[in-house]
Image (cartoon, rainbow, N blue to C red; front, side):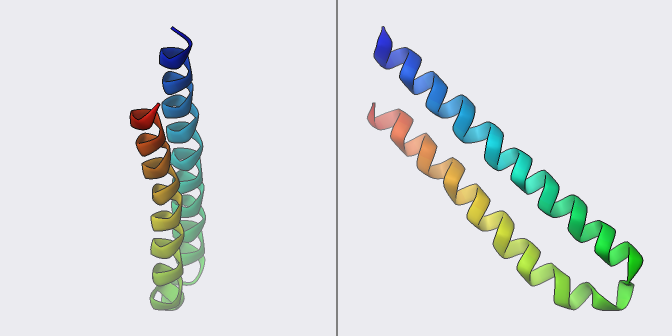
Length: 68
């Protein structure tokens, strides 16, 4: 029973916090582009990298949940 609860907590927390991080990264990048459209090509690559790293954390938590 505790293994099921542990796996559920890993998925819940490991999915929630990266999703919030991706939301904040995207919102702030779009806000910056809205303020300065010429900077879009300088903002988008770091935004995509940040989103990819946040998504990697969610994937690690999914793997840990399957291992438990």
